[in-house]
Length: 121
Image (spheres, rainbow, N blue to C red):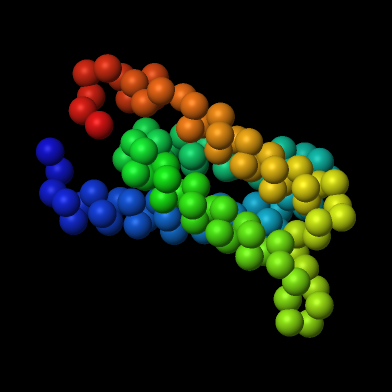
């Protein structure tokens, strides 16, 4: 069993990863047309799977919560009236709801499928 500080540090790193993925994805989803959107959603999925495999539910929850908060903040109107993820754009809507859907699909995967049955979680 790993020390508590090590597990807490890992969960904090996954929360930072969630914020980073939301930041990168909120900028990159418009980069190459719909291919940029697909790549951004694949990034959400791959880091989500890593988070759930590495630190089970606590790590995945930290990652998903940080992603949701940062993606929500990027969807708000800024002080100058600009918005990074507008609500009247199809790709932006697919980015937000698609990312949430990817998170829901990853949450539905049982932990033993990712880590095996003989690994304590």
